[in-house]
Length: 254
Ligand code: CA
Image (tube, rainbow, N blue to C red; front, side, top):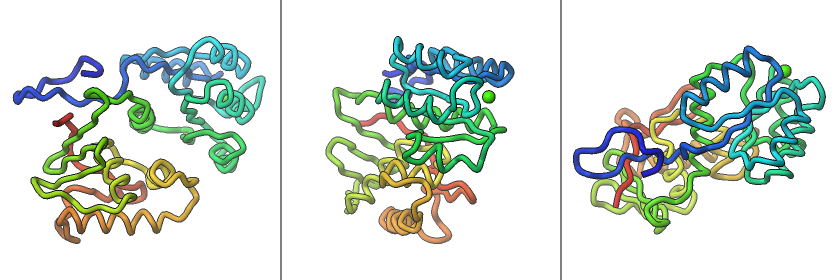
């Protein structure tokens, strides 16, 4: 069991908490109010959190510690956040960088190839939103469980990620490769509102400004194959203005 917390299930199955509790996070923020608040919140989740107040500090610390995730303020006193991001990504290739910016006009630069950030949040943001994003990113970094075999069940939908097979109740679903990828992504993030841009970039490897028409088509196909209708779509919820959420809580299966 990863994490060692959460309720044990009465049927003996391990509770499913794919976010590594030992995740190492670096908060790069010169504003003490924001920086301290972020550190407190993240430490409260059980993660190992450190803070840097300048870009130079961030790069020095990143040379010593292999951070899993870096929350990086775009407006730093010494170096430009975009430059810091670029250097961080080459120093710690495995690190996920989430940019924090008040400069909405720079989002293209931040998330585009220029800086290579994985995600961004515009200030002011809600801590709940930040935590949801951080958890979603860390979940993808979690090591394979169950001896490398990963099976996840949410409600009546089960997925064997290793075998790339999916079932609703006892019936196996016939899914195209991208439909499987999308369903696996949604199920793995069950209970979390996933942004359209994030889904696109994670499942299709496209930049967030890419067409999301493809996503809608695949969601429709999944709903149909899951036996859902326009009025009865209890599994994949549409979150207006945000994206989608697979309803339920995942448990490890098999
Ligand atoms: Ca700042």
